[in-house]
Amino acid sequence: MVIKVAAGIICQDDAFFIALRKKEQHQGGLWEFPGGKCDDGESPDTTLVRELKEECGITATEYYPFKLISHDYGDKQVELHFYKVIAFEGIAEGQEGQETRWVTASDLHLYAFPEANQAIVSALLNVD
Ligand SMILES: Nc1nc2c([nH]c(=O)n2[C@@H]2O[C@H](COP(=O)(O)OP(=O)(O)OP(=O)(O)O)[C@@H](O)[C@H]2O)c(=O)[nH]1
Ligand SMILES: [Mg+2]
Image (cartoon, rainbow, N blue to C red; front, side):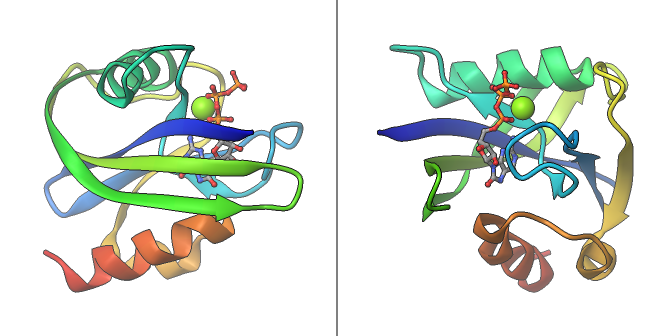
């Protein structure tokens, strides 16, 4: 079964907001763009807004689909709907005790991301 996920590339000034996945999570110990699984029948847009509120405490107000990535981790197959979030209300802060950072595109390579994110990291380096 393919797990549908929505994740937000939250942009502010020249930086992106990333969070460290907890050890016990799938792909734990790696950095991520905050987000999570779509509930049954939930659209990725709705999931995005809900998850960013739950995990980062912000209300996304302007966002658009950036890339759709399907990836097979062997233990899990995911369909990742990555969005760029270009406006939001509130201050982005980890709501679940997770470590977070604002990182510029050129510094993203210093952080280890899940395999499915490599195409995103490359794209962010080539796009302003
Ligand atoms: N949020 C997020 N998930 C990602 C990214 N890249 C990636 O492969 N994933 C995978 O997508 C899946 C969804 O993630 P999640 O663990 O955030 O889901 P969730 O917030 O609903 O978590 P929960 O199951 O603890 O309630 C995981 O299998 C995770 O490994 C990413 O950049 N952000
Ligand atoms: Mg999550």
